[in-house]
Image: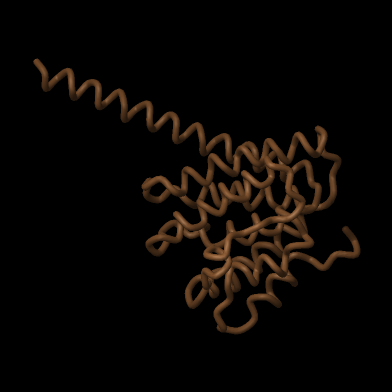
Length: 202
C-alpha cells in the first residue's frame, strides 16, 4: 500500500470547495481502491447523531447494496444511476470535509497492514453480511441509532482498505454490539407488549 495516496488526501481533494458532488463522482474516484474506501466515505455523513430526513435511508440502502455486491463476489462497487446521481451539498459536504478528513488522518496514523486471521474471501463475505444487517438498521425508523453503525462501517472500511486485522476485528466487535443492542431492545419491547396485552385483557 506504500504507493497509494493516503485516503485523507484523496477525500480532501475530492471535497475541495463548496461545489456539489454526486455519489457517482465519489465512486469514480474510489473505484480502484475497492469497497473499503467507499465504505469509509459512506460512513462519514452518518456519524452525526441527528441526520436530515431521508439520509439514513439512502446510506442504509447503499450499505446493503455494497454488502450484496461483496457477497456476489464483485471486485469493484457498482451503483445504480439514481444513486450515482444523488448530490452531496452544503452541510453534508462540510461534515465530510471538516470532520471526516481530520478523523481519517488520525486513524491513518494508527492503521497499518497487519496479517488477516482468515482467508480474505471468507472475511469479505463476513463483512458483507454485517453491511447488509447494518444497512437494514439504518433503513428502519429507529431514532438516534446511526452513529454506531456508521462507526462500525468506518472501522471495517479502514481495516479492509489497509488489510489491517486490528481494525477489522474492532469493526466486527462494534457491529456485533450494535446488532445485540437492537435484538435486546426488540426483546424488551416485545416483552412489554406481551405484558400490556395480558394486562389489558384482564
